Length: 616
Image (cartoon, rainbow, N blue to C red; front, side, top):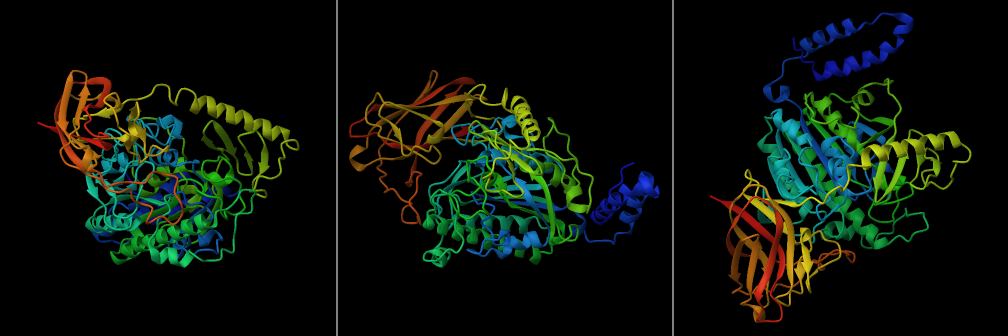
C-alpha cells in the first residue's frame, strides 16, 4: 500500500519525531502510532483545487561570484537586498552552508548531489567543466516525475550533447554554456542549441524568460534553475544601479592585508542589487499567480566573492578553500510548510541540495550512483533533530580543506576554531593535536576516495553529432590554435581565434563523432574587406568541405563601453555566420581541422565557433 503524506502532515510528524527522543523516559509514542497519525493528518487536510494539490514547484536561483557578505541580511550595510532577504525571512537560513571555490564544481554538486571530482569535473574550461554523461541530475529526476524543466543563464557544465543542458533533463535552455560571457547587453546567446541574440541586460533578460516559464506552467509542476551570470566579471550593470554606487562611500571594507579595489566592489554590489530586483520580480510573479505556498524557492551563490571586499571578516575569496572562498548564503522558502525565520547552524553543503529538494517535493528517485549529500529536511522541520555530526570538504587546484561543526583544517594542515576565528588568524593545531590529526586523516581518506581515480584520467574528446540533437557547437574555447593563431585572451571562455596569417596556420578540435551522418556547417567569423576571398577547408578524416569567404564582416571589438571596471576577459565582436557547406562524418574519434588553402590578404579570418546541424 502506498500512502501519500501531505506537507502539513509531514511537518507535524517531524515535530513529533523530535518528541520521540523522550521515548526512553515516557514510552508513549511508537513508530506505528506515527504512521497511523500520518494517514489521519493527510486525510484531514482540506480539499484544494488542482493547482494547489499538484507537486510543489521548484525554483533554484544561483548567483555567480557573489560572496556570503554581499547581502544586507548578512550584515552588509553598503547595499540593500530586501527581496533576497525576504526569502530568508519567509523560510530557513543555513548559517554555515558551503559550496566549492569556483563555478563549475559547485554547479556539478548542486545538480548531482555528489562531490564534483566524482562527476568528471576538474576545471572551468576546455572540457574540464563537463559532468560525466552517466551522472544523474536533479533535472533528470524531476523531469521523469512529470515536471516541466528549464535552465536560464550560465550553465558551465558542458556544451555539446550529451553534456548540453537539453541532454541533462532540461526541456528549455536559454543562456550560455561557457564559464563567463563577454558582454551582458543584448549578447549572442543560444536557445536550445540555436544561436540567438539576447534582449537587453542579461540578468533582466533571463528573468523575463523565467517569468514566462512560470506563467506558462502555473497549473503544472515545474523546475526552474535560474543561474544568473552576475556579479561575475566583466563588471557590467545598467546605469540606474551603477549610479547609486559610482561615488558611494562604502562604510564596510575588506579588513585583510590584500588591497580592495573600491570601484570593483561598487560594481559588484550594484550588480547584486540588480539581482535582488530580479529576485523580487520572480517572487511577485509567484504571489500574483497564487503559487507561493506550492513553490520551493532556494537562493545561493556558487563560490566566494570575486574580489577582496567585506565578507564578515572571513579569510579567502573565490578560488580559495578557506572559509571566505566557500561559504555561501543558503535560504529555503516553502511558505505554509517551513517555519518563517528559522536559522540552522549545522554545517551543510551544495551536495545536500539534491536529496533535500527531492524530499521536500516528495519525488522518488532511483539513483544510479550513491550520493554524498544528506537530506536536510530534519534540520528544516525539527527543533531538536537527531543529526550526526559530519565533515564538509572543499577542494580546488590541488588544495583541500575540511570543515567540521567547530573547526576548519586548511590546505596547509593548520587548524582553526572557525566559530570564533572566521579570519583564520590563530592556528590552534598545537593545542589540539588529536583533533588536527583526525581531520588530516579524514582529508587524506577523502582525497584517496574522491580525487584519485576520478579526475583527469583521460582527456575526453568533444562529442559531435549526437543522433538525438540537431545542433552541435564547437567554440574556439574548445579548440587548439596552431602556428601564428592565438586566442583573443588567456582565459579561454568566450574567446575567439585571431592572427590567422599563413596557410601553415590552422586550428583543431579533438572530437568524437558519436553517430555518423551529414552535417551542414556554419562558421561564425570576421574578415576585413581587404582580406576577403580566402578559401577555408574543414576536414575530419577523409571528409572535407571547402568554401570561400566572399563577404567582409569587420565589426569593432566591443564591451568596454559597458564596463564599470577594467576587465581581464576577452572583449567580443559581432561574428557573422557563413555556410561552409555539407560534410559527411563517420563515427569515431579524430582531429577536426580548419585550414586556409589560400590567404590573398593579410589574414584569413577570425573564428568564434563552428555550428554543425545534422541533416537527413
